[in-house]
Amino acid sequence: MAAEQIAYTVKEFAPAVPEWLNKGDNAWQMTAATLVGIQSMPGLVILYASIVKKKWAVNSAFMALYAFAAVLICWVLLCYRMAFGDELLPFWGKGAPALGQRYLRGRAKVPESKHRGYNDVDDITEPLYPMATLVYFQFTFAAITLILLAGSVLGRMNIRAWMAFVPLWLIFSYTVGAFSLWGGGFLYHWGVIDYSGGYVIHLSSGIAGLTAAYWVGPRLKCDRERFPPNNVLLMLAGAGLLWMGWSGFNGGAPYAANIDSSIAVLNTNVCAATSLLVWTSLDVVFFGKPSVVGAVQGMMTGLACITPGAGLVQSWAAIVMGMLSGSIPWVSMMVLHKKCSLLQKVDDALGVFHTHAVAGLLGGLLTGLLAEPDLCKLILPFDTRGAFYGGNGGVQFLKQIVAALFVITWNVVSTSIILLFIRLFIPLRMPDNQLEIGDDAAHGEEAYALWGDGEKYDPTEHGWHISQFSEVAAPSPYVNGARGVTINL
Image (tube, rainbow, N blue to C red; front, side, top):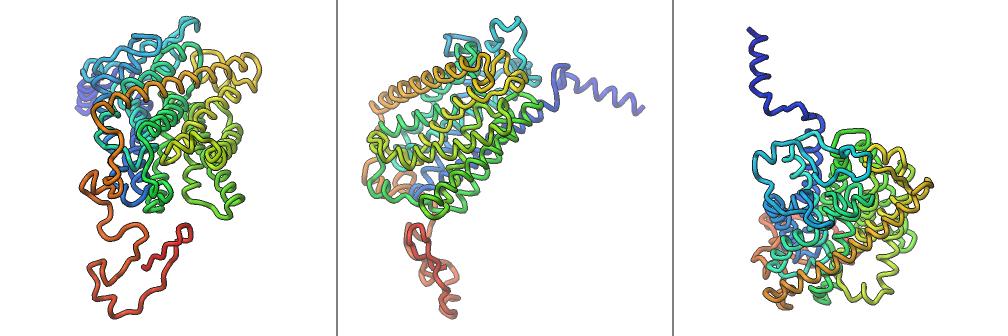
C-alpha cells in the first residue's frame, strides 16, 4: 500500500518536475535572484536613505523603491524579451510579454545565444530550469541598474520626472546593452566578455548617471557643500546587504550551481575586501583617518570591478583587481575630479561615475588581460583568454575596449534624448524653494520626527520621558569629529 501511494505521488507531481529540470540549479538560481533583489530591496533603499542629508532620506529611499517596482512590471510586459528574446536588430530584441504560463513553465533559453561558428553546438550555458526563474533573475539585475543610476541625481530630481524616466531608460538603454552583450547581440557573438554586468550594469549606470546629473542640474549650493550622512550605522547595514547579496549577483551568472559559480563567489568577496582595505589605507595616508563612507565606496568599487570577470580570473588576480579598484577610482574621485572642469560642473551626488563607471570599465579591461583560459572554457561558448596568457588575448583586450566605447556612447546619447523628451512635459529639477525643504515638499513626509541636521538633542523638548531628565544630571556630550556637531545623548 505504501509503495502504491509513493508511485501515485510521483505520478501526480511529475508534470512539475520534467526530465530537463535540475532541482539544484533551480534552487540556487532562485536563491541568487533573491540575493540580488535584496541588494536593492532593502539594501540600496536603506543605503540611500541613510547616506544622504536628513532632509532627503525619504525621497532617496522612495526613488529606489519606485524603480524596483516599476522595472518589474515593465520587465514582464515588454523588456525581458527585448533583452533576451528573438533578434530584432543586432543590438536589440523583439519586445513581447513574458507572462503566459506556457512560456514561463518551459525550459529556460536565450534563443539568440547559440554561438555562431562554435562547432554548431548549443550554448554550453543553457539553463536547466524554467523560464520563470530566468525572467525573475534577470529582472533583479535590471532593477539594480536603475537604482544605482539614481545615486547620481539624489537630492534634487523631480520625483515625477524620475517616475517617467525609469521605464523609458529601461526600454531604450538597458535592454540594448543587455541584448548586445548577454542576449545574443553583436557584441556577444563578437566574443566580448561581460561575466555578470561590469558593462551592462556598472558602466551603464555610471555613465547614464553622470549624463542625467548634467541635464537635471545641481543640488542647492548648501547641500552640495555639506551633505553628511544622516545615519552612518544604518548606511553600513545597507552596505552589508549589498556586499552579501553580491554572492548571488556573480554566483548566479553561470546559470547553474557549478564550479564556476563557486569560483565567482570566492573571487567576488576577495576583490571587495582587498579594495576596501586599499581605499581605507589611502584615506589614512592622505587624510589622517579612515572614513567609513570611504570604506563603503572602496567596497563598491571592488564589487563592480570583479563583476565582469568574477568566474574567469584566478583568485590571485582577484586580489590584483581589488588593489587597482581600491586605488584608481580613489584617484579619480579625490584627485582627478577636482582638476576636471566637467566633473566639477556636474553634480554626481554619490559619485556613481567613480564607483561604478570607472570601476566597471577597469574591471572589463582587466578581464581582457587576466581571463584564465581554462576558466573561460568552463562557461564561455567560445575559445578565448586574457592578453596576459598570450594567444589571442591581445585581440580580446581590444574587443573589451570597443565594447566599452559602444556602451558609453549609447548611454550618453539615449539618456540625453530621454531626459530632453521628459523635460518637454515635466521639469527635471525641483524648484529651489522645494529643494530647501526636501522630503516634506516632495512627499509630505519626513524620515525623523524629532530634530534635524546639526540640531542638539534636548531632553527637555524631545521625547516622551521628559520628566525623568529633570531628576538626573546631564550626561556627557559626544562630538562628531567629522562634522564638529555636538550631540547630547
